[in-house]
Amino acid sequence: MTKVLLFIENGFEDMEAMYPFYRLQEAGYVVDVVGPGKGTVYQGKYGYPLTADVAPEDVRIADYAAVIIPGGQAPDRMRLNDQMVDLVKEADQRNLVIGAICHGPQMLIEADIVRGRNVTCYRSILTDILNAGAIYHDMEVIMDDKLITSRMPRDLPAFCREILNVMPEARIK
Image (tube, rainbow, N blue to C red; front, top):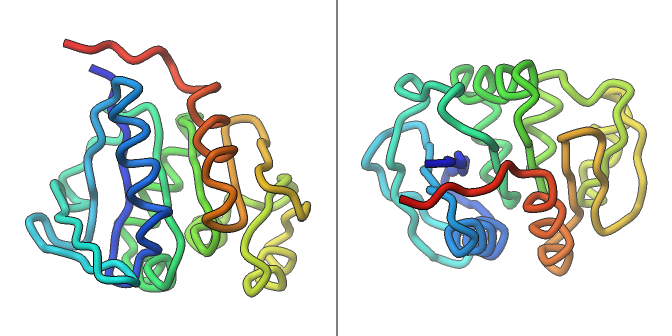
């Protein structure tokens, strides 16, 4: 079964987590939610709850085809968790699909994987992206190999489309 890892913490942008969560399931992927505490319920920016299926220390990144990082205030909290940052680094080293939207690229910055790569993000973290050495484009979605970034919730259709375009075929059991 092809699996995707969705990162979560309090203050996630509800639509940026839920749209990919259900869209990837609809396409036949298993979506596991990873947060600092397994079984912990995390609240979205607008109150939507998501429960972490797995803690970062229990993730075997080789079991996954993709990592999705929604925005909101969650990435600023997640980047303080070394184990979650290490998962992003390892996903990049393994050439997994990595999707980050809005403030999600804060995790890419913390993992030091944007230097010299083409990305986009929400405009409030533009200076951070540039200081991290990324090449910024103000477009709804940017693909740099298997690194896929978008700016905001209205870009979700393009974001998910590009993720699905590069994902291995889902194997539904």
